[in-house]
Image (tube, rainbow, N blue to C red; front, top):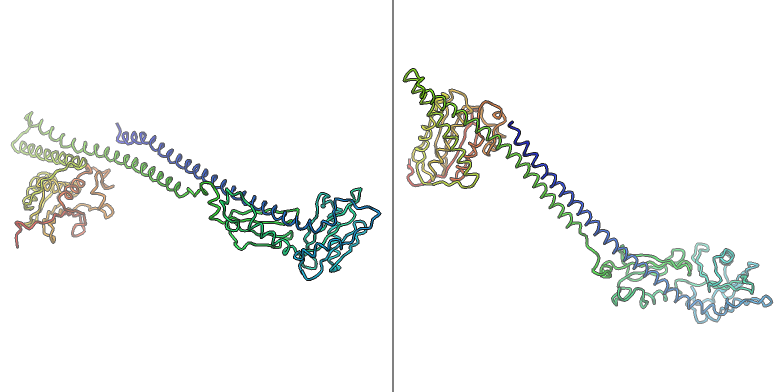
Length: 550
């Protein structure tokens, strides 16, 4: 099996999981959009209903105002009785026939102290006869042209009782109301009317409707007065403002209605924003966007976490595969040496006592290497399973350092490495003897493995404040600054060493880190003095018992 076969198989197994996670994210996105769209449509429907309420209120308001105005105007125009045909042989009545009503309805005039301006327009000759306050020449012409144009143009229907017209004469807004008199043949004979002040005339009716009119059903208003839930603006046929309620609200829930029957009277109704919410059963739907975005963000975070875990699993699988390959290589070398020299001794192929001793030394050296590697694997396994147990006892450190250097001696001599020690006496700490030996053996193994032949490795034990500092200096290539934290993690090797002839399992420094931390210490790596090689440093808290005062 090739070295990359297992990682490739792992990637193939993780692809369905990646696809499932991405599909989950896509499904969450679709569901979030659908939920948002449903909430949006629900709110849009509720807002449309409120605008329809406003449209109905504007229509109802206009109808109520029309009824008020109609009753007043019909009473004034009653003497004309347009439903009764005008005999041909009887002269047309004078416009003064409308005057008695104005004695009572003085408020209909723009200037109540003046006589009303009453007129009659002959449909055949176009002549305008007046009574009361005379019309100006321009006003008279505008009345004639307007009435004739409407009647002859078919814009005045016979079943209309009257027609109200708004216009501008010499830059001033003017308004008239007229009624048509017909003959027996259904032909228009004359139009009778008068000029009136639409603002003075309509305002009382509008105010009465606003205060007392049933503009909306009680189930919607819940008994609230009209002016407390809506504002009203009424304009004439030219867009001039006739009336504005005292309260003026601004909200998206408004509508307009135009009353063509009364010269284009237009009413705009606007609901108070906070009341509009109460008019809907259950209230206006709130925005679900923050909640939906939160759910989508949470889903995205979970999917990204899952993808990162899969990526980490793939990476760990690759590292474990590399670890197995490296350990197999490291085990094969000492095992091959042990087998070869053991066979040499068994078959009696040694030619002298010196060769016998050399063979035994190599067997001892390789056995030590094998034992050290197996111990590293066991310590790493215990740390991974969190079953690492240390027997921390206060004891001097120098003897343990000396013992570890002596145990490692044959391995160092095999590469012609000189190990020098500088050990301060009287330094005590609460440590585990086996762990201390394993720490120093791993640091020495790294120094010998990656350093040159014939180098000098220095082991120093010294006091650093209230800490005992153990340092191992080598003459190797050193550790780049960017990698001085990464190398303490499991399965991590420098890029320069991955494809080199130097075998390594990638767990030696991870075991050192775990053992040091488990004993309350700390460790790091720095540049060796002189700028050549690396210095690995570990520290342990000192205890006061048994310390040498000197």
